[in-house]
Amino acid sequence: MKQILLKVSDGIVPRLRILLTLALFTATTLCGCGLKERLRSFLQGGPDEAAAVRVGGSVFTRAELERFFDSRLSEFREPGNADGVKSSLLESFVEEKMLLLEAERGGVKADPATVSSMMEEVAGPGAEGKAAGEELRRTVKESLTVQRYLQERLLKDVSVSDQECEEYYNQHISDYVSRDVIHVREILVDDQEQAERILASLKASRNRNFGELARLHSKAATAADGGDMGQFQRGELPMEFERVVSRLQPGSVSRIVRTRYGYHMFMVEERIGAHQQKFYEVREQIHDKLVAERQMDIIRKELSELQRRIPVEIYSESLGFKYVGKKLAPGGEVN
Image (cartoon, rainbow, N blue to C red; front, side, top):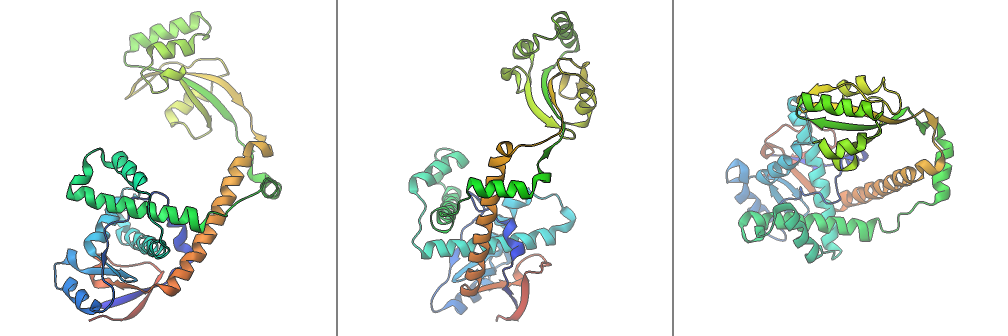
């Protein structure tokens, strides 16, 4: 059986979804003496029970990998590239397991109250008494353990000053030019006759009662806010809406627009022309960007160090797909 040794590199790190990921599934731990015999027992079972990857002393089966993949594949829309997607996810799986092992080695444990709270949020009350609930609890516990390790041990000292933010802004000032923005309100109803009556009422009051009529009659989620949809740059609204609102002047109301959801009317509250954004407008955005970059750099270095210390074996014949990534290098044979 072919074995592949993992090489962790910078390209893997951006795929990490560390904070509160619920994709860390049950691990079967095989440690100390007798590891080779236990591996054989795995390999003698059906394909789902075959050992697919070992991270440190923990062996994970093909079934465990498939559950991990299933929890993530809904995020991808490339059915013709299943091998590529699974190859990328395999690398993420290994990274998360390495971080979990390091967290456990350092004595980091998830807070039991937080685990229970998250269980209720994810699965509802009473889920823990069932077998599936116990597996989900392990998943939540492992995820929260990694999160706690990152927050309290690895990333706790990351900070960015206002001065650093302002320096970054001055060096990248051309990146912070706002495009034209329109502030839009909407009314959505089911009946065309009702829409026409509302439009007539708006015309009679020169559109001053748009928010009131939205609260009274609109079935859109924005009704309670007087139909306020917020601000949009060009291209952010559905094309059928943008064609209508792009022609409107502030304070004017659109014609009735019919879609499969019903009959829409829009009002442009205001237009904000393209302009150079001031530092105070983007300070928080820049701060978050710089913090995220520093955090990822720390995680990248941590993974590089863990890769040197934690042995990883990939059993290619048990994966159930063809590995096509570039982060794994061929190794020897496992019998």
